[in-house]
Length: 123
Image 1 (cartoon, one colour):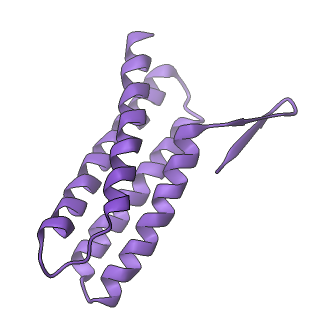
Image 2: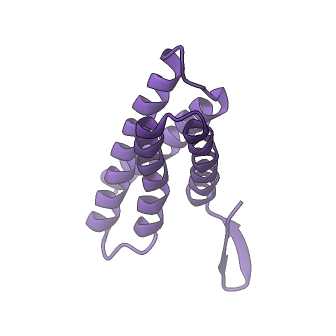
Image 3: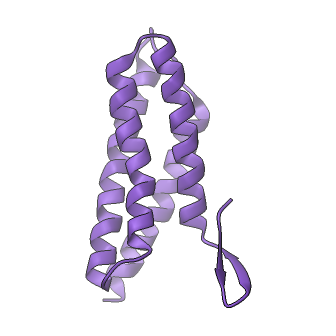
């Protein structure tokens, strides 16, 4: 898990740490896909799955509330795309699938959409 140190106090940033963990799991799963020569889906899933984390990280240093909301919206869009690629893996009989990734992307989605709704309400 990732910790953020603020004035000598460690405080876990849940969305940052969960997104990093998810991105690392996506990388590992995409390596499995590539080892089975599923290159197209592996590439798409790798891009969208790691982009969630990248946009969450960018949001941590947003220039304004509007910029923060925009970056979180992009993370939410990438999250939905990632769900799509994982769904294809789940439904395709010739593809591997990891149930843990489905759970983690849904859990991360709940956090991201809560952040988004709270941020919009506090404009």
